Length: 126
Image (cartoon, rainbow, N blue to C red; front, side):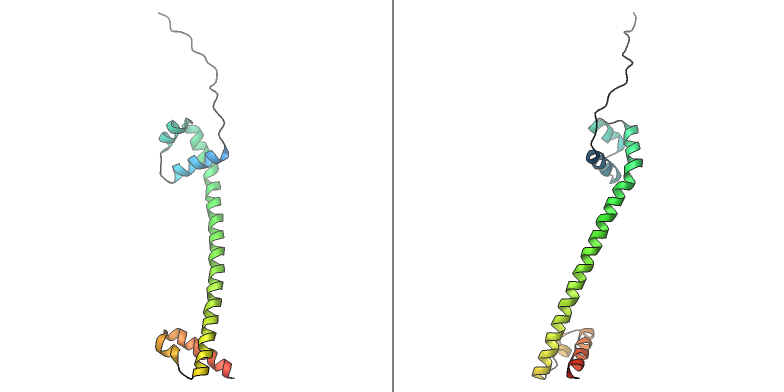
């Protein structure tokens, strides 16, 4: 018996969006799935997946690092806000101690904060 001739044309693969590529690469690099499993699950050749990982893995890391920079900027802004609130509260406590004549900060606050408040009191009295 003679085998039937098989078609030798190149297999046409479907086009994959950039977002889908990053999604699949993210799953592979995070260790959620393996390259073999991703190949079977998404019907993508392993060589294509390995090529995408080489090409886009650094891009994905850059995107993550940009989000880290944004997070750092947000945290710095929050620190500034909290320092402003702390200074305001220390000013209020210093004014209260000047008006009442009692040292509440030494009794109820940590030593470092009490020292800061006493410095503010002395500066206000000058």
